[in-house]
Image (cartoon, rainbow, N blue to C red; front, side, top):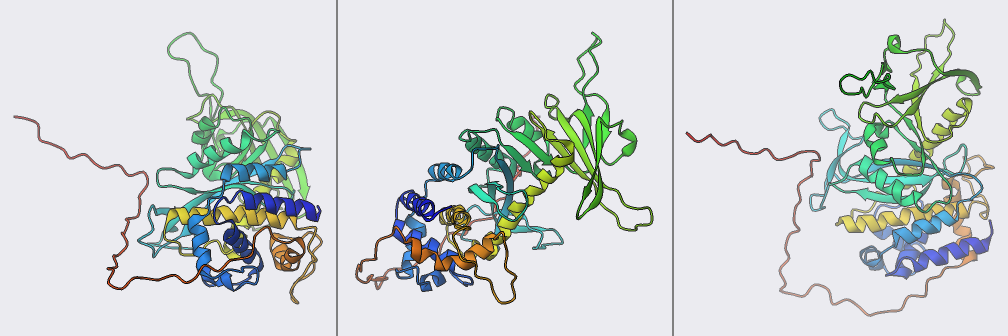
Length: 435
């Protein structure tokens, strides 16, 4: 990694912002170098933001980041030596007290308990990210987009996977959590050139291939039942290995071939069970890990479950996004402003990735130095690098003072929008039959 590559990336990003380029780009530099903020206007206090605080709001109102071209720019930074590993997940931007924000929905939020249920009100965002390392907290988003009220996480994930895979030179492996491990996703991704490694819930029921057709009646779609939480329905595994892990100890990995969901009988999967081998005197309990593989050439059984663990880098990125990149700090008034602000988050993450070998590590007195820098450590040290590589923005020009609100104009209240409940269809009124 060198300075010219990072400078070239920043110049290309600047050109793809379309409108309000200078204010938007300086806003990104302010986000990278600001550790704590309480409102969006606080970024104007950064020395990297040379404009007045109203320019921040103007930037989010006027900028139009080109998502498709930015996605292809991100892909150019991915090495082409081996198939990329991608992960898909979604998170919520909670907006409980924003009735004037249009298109809010109910979403899963474990930290927000309403009526003893882990739900919240806000807007969901789906992310597909490249996972560059075998272990660590780096996840580099290729697309990070809002899930509208007429979409669901699975349909949005399928659309993002299609957009990404048609531009990748090599067939990727895509990692998904148990929420995506169902027949709906398999049916919608049938024509996508990608391999899928998904976790499924332990209460699922799978089926083997149907027996040969007897010539009578309709051909069967399903064979023998395989209930994950009922070991009496299991048959002998096709393959089994035992491996030693430095953290988890002894593990047993088993695989069953050619199973399928009830709703996707034509999609054969390889079912994988990962269990800890605990001594008999141990009182601790360990939940099994159920995975399914759908694709062409499956990795060795002993090494496939560590591949799935790379998916958790997206969870690390979400935490970094909310805590350090201040994604949920602004209380923006329209979904479009939130989308433009969210489009800046992948750009910031990729800049940190390209700068990881260029920064001089700066750690706080209570932090230990690291050999492999995390995104937080790079953000902590990038303030000294930005003056060296420069900025593509131009100096601000004074435009005079705004006349402000004219005396005598009436102010109107903003429209209040109800929270959208997904999956609800209006009931038709019953009419009495004619006598």
